[in-house]
Image (cartoon, rainbow, N blue to C red):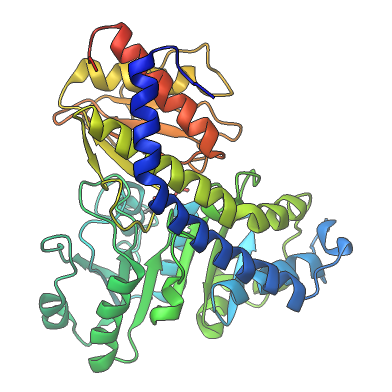
Length: 419
Ligand SMILES: *Cc1c(COP(=O)(O)O)cnc(C)c1O
């Protein structure tokens, strides 16, 4: 089917789709592998329709919740997991994982440079410090990447007797570095554990789930965390986060989430389980749709002389596609067009505006079913050189294709680009 009346553009789409076909095939293979992982876990843990119902009140003996956590644990090769609607976001899940396992006098080292914006406040590097790790007596440092790789030599030199947790962020989030593959993460963990077997390795797995064959625990991570309105929610979860890892660490996270002594034993799942099960089941496929969309986006925009990372044929370990426009008007028009091609709020035009925590104005296209859900197609970036937009998600490959073509058509129509 032609998706544009512009014959030259239609030709370019067809050329690009032919070119990216082998990459899309590889993405399908990863999806099949991960779908099997998830299906096997559902079967082995023997999920029944009774598990989908949910509990109320204290939520004692919530076997649906406990079985869902067992499914997550099996899929991520962890001893235990916490998957709850009471975990309100990825930042909350990461905060629980870190603060449960760091006490007064301990040190946290992030070895992938500065972490995601919201975590700087959690640690206490920015913000007013209230309730932060630093306020609670935890010391902190981060070690910058060199050439987008973990500087393992400096990491090993920086570890002291106080070092309790090492943090690794898999996805670049909104920074300009490359994301780290599970393989790269594994190499760093091996080097650290060879000398310091007792250091806890935490991986922020946000945006990474099901993009590769393996997950971080399989290469030695002790504890991982992520958000259910990103990959593992499969586009269906309306709230939630997960933490998975070794039994003792997860027990502490449970105590931190609810109360010492209560831990994972309570916490009603209410109406969340149905979508959490179904979303996790769909996730490998939905992630593959997002990835295919990202590859298409990268290839199309590259052939229109825009600078994209990763390139269409580069290895991927998360959903984020950056596009460097080098031009303010191009960037704004593109982001607005993504909103126009969204299922929700397509009639509203996003404008650059101030956002707390950012020095420059930010523009965001987020016409999503679930507020802020970046497993759905979204695009955003700060209004400053090099005018970089982060495009991520997409519930269906078809939607991403339609949205990107619409954006290109508008750029052509406004004479901002030409074919
Ligand atoms: C999204 C994200 C977070 C935070 O998740 P929220 O759900 O937005 O709080 C943390 N780290 C990375 C790498 C992310 O992409």
